[in-house]
Image (tube, rainbow, N blue to C red):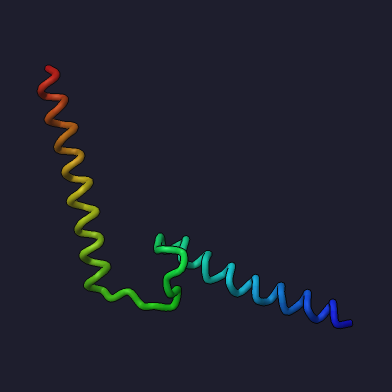
Length: 70
């Protein structure tokens, strides 16, 4: 009976840890960060702006390289 209780508690703890890590993976955050922390709207906007600028810069570089090749 004691082994069954130990196994169930171990499974429960493993499930909780796995869910927390899964949330962090899904949000593309570091594994050991707080999965319940709220990201502010300002932080999201900054991240989206940075990603947009980076993609735009890469597209501009590709266009410049294509023009130089002609």
